[in-house]
Amino acid sequence: MIYRMVLIPLLLLLSLSTRAELMIEITQGMDNPTPIAIVPFSGSGDLPENIQQIVSSDLLRSGFFRPLAPSDMLSLPSRQQDIFYRDWRILGVEYLVIGQVREAAVGAADDYIVDFQLYDVLGQRNVMQKTITGSVAELRDIAHEISDVLYQTLTGIRGAFSTKILYIEDLRREGAGRYRLVKADADGAREKVLFTTSEPLLSPTWSNDMTQVAYVSFETGRPAIFRQNLLTGVREQLTNFKGLNGAPAWSPDDSKLAMVLSKDGNPELYTLDIASKKLTRVTNHFAIDTEPNWTADGKGLIFTSNRGGNPQIYQVGLETGRVERLTFEGDYNARPRVTPDGKSLVMVHRYKGVFHIAWQDIASGDMRILTETWLDESPSIAPNGAMLLYATKYNDKGVLAAVSMDAGVKFRLPSKQGDVREPAWSPFVKK
Image (cartoon, rainbow, N blue to C red; front, side):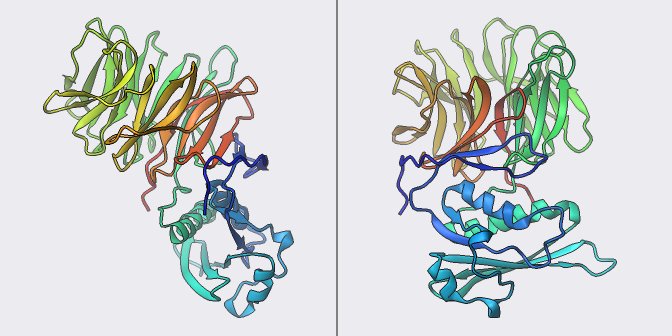
């Protein structure tokens, strides 16, 4: 059984890769995670990526599992006939993962063939087995895919270890390159700088097919929305209106961007058809309407507005124009993000003067606070709906942090340099 809000004051520093600019510090885990052993795969000793360590780190970060260190293992089996279940029971292990890495035949499309198997130690039976192939450059992807398969097999929830994140990094130095738009693996590894500028960047967001990103850049002297092709690197400025141009959000089919424009004097919600460049005004109110996020079915926008006197969350139907208020608890709720199933949302919620991240069931209005630190902002939900990233402050630096939807697991991703903010979790990676 997994209990919520049980603080385990462990600070496990998992250095996942010397190439990672973000390091993971687990600050809270479940109080009864499932003990699992991932045995170093045979044939993996000379590989440039440590598959066993990557899988173990992924599963540990989920909070559901407590991987056994290889140094504590009594044996290192790589075949079923080499498994002595009694040894693993003595160690308290419930599930065992073994695997083998082979070089593919000369001329094959991929460099390596990775076989892995999952065993139930108490039941002394094979639970699943799978083969994944890939190039040497894809070994880290293979490890994350193994984590996804194990996680889904044992929890019933689709794994999101293969996903990516975007974030803005402020290196705190004047001049070109101060602000960076960065893409990285969900664990912070393999960061890639997509764009640098001397002017601020805001609100990065993924297209749902993961071929493009959109964001706000001040490089022209005022806020403007750009989109950037991730395959070619080609950038296109989409808006150049007077006043505010902000908060882009892709529609579920990637055909439109929702955004906030104040070109007519007041911040209002608009949608932009990407192909035709046709702009459609969605709201028309004297209050400030901002931070749009699409509903799961693409038929409406959920947004922040102070039309009731204080910032609260509302929903507007794109065909009907009907506006409905969704939040009533507290005097400040903003930056809404809809969960993948469309049934709930997360937001920045002010409670007793402190800004937290909160979750709310849309139908019932039930709310719970997920974070306990100060000045938490910019929530972004994993595509499996199990975790969310947000920006916060730690040791006077802007860092990213993550929390599970039941608040039972928390970890930080501080940067080696500068401030990190504005995280955006990608959709599932299509294979």
